Image 1 (cartoon, rainbow, N blue to C red):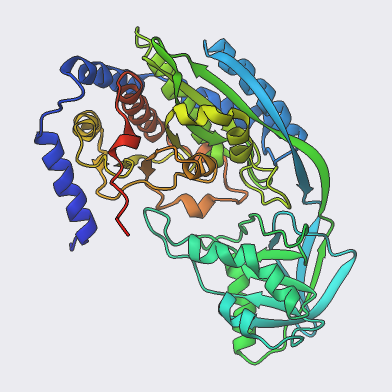
Image 2: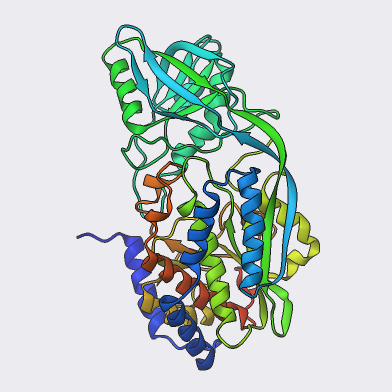
Length: 475
């Protein structure tokens, strides 16, 4: 078996770090982190939390009553687990309800298709029936002559998502979902359809948000399940004219979302904050177990494990369950990460680091630290604690975090990544199959152990990741 250069580099770095002494983190800190790690591996609250969340509330679309009720319950759950300063912070949101939807091929050989409306797409205001024009990329759609799609349905089939451990195949396709409806509208189309963004071949489409343009989504947009996308593409390749009938009663409404915040207050430097992020909202097709009930479970359980260790850390560990991560908005007010950043004001300067768990519940395989920290004493200590549970040190710095902590990263807060195995994540992501039974309890506990041990090392130290950043090149 041939190993990639990146994997070889990661393995070599992990081995070198494992053998090196840890200067900044003394032996007692490393021993305590290992003890916290082992305790979390054998017992933690993660499965209890995600089981209750998904069973009590099911799907939690952004701004829905289910999301609001789940947030209130989560705040009570935090209080019962001993978190301090628990609070709910609301912000305005444009909510979206799917309603009912259908799609079918009409004509001499009619057949039903399985589709899902793209998030925040408008309804069809009755039935749309029109001929399909297929494109193999967003670029090809953008290159179509102005007005060439008048009265027609634009269809982008860029092929199946490439399955990769780090999920890198997702980005090239999700941009089609975001920009496709506006591109189709610019060419005169009456609707937009696409192959759903997933690595599976199940007849379950993947939904997901699309992009506002001048305060609205311009066209009804739909994701076709993979088998149905292939069916439509085959018919067109055979020279058939394909006409579709589309129907959707989706609509938007004014509402609020909220962030749920709780913390383990620091012992001696409580103003210095470490943020552990995930999101509360989910899409409506499943119950939001892997996206992202699991992330809330992991971060809550990690903080709880630290609190139960018998010694509060010097710095504050803050868990944030963000609202409305899944949706685009016509303004900048409807994202939980942005709302959190606006709410903390100048306190952002005292945010030591932030991490986000939003990639399911399968095992962590790599640790990404902020730029400049890869060969630090802290990295050596972290590797000594994480390597025994299968977490390698990544040679690549973590730069962006995720959607929820992205605003903090943009404001200069260092971010870390405990990178999970995403090989099967996009089989389930944004589908009806995102349910509790897909979570492996042992892998979930390995996540909790990695988070708890790493965060303890940061929280009970004076490590300064901002000071480690490489100097900007001289001009």
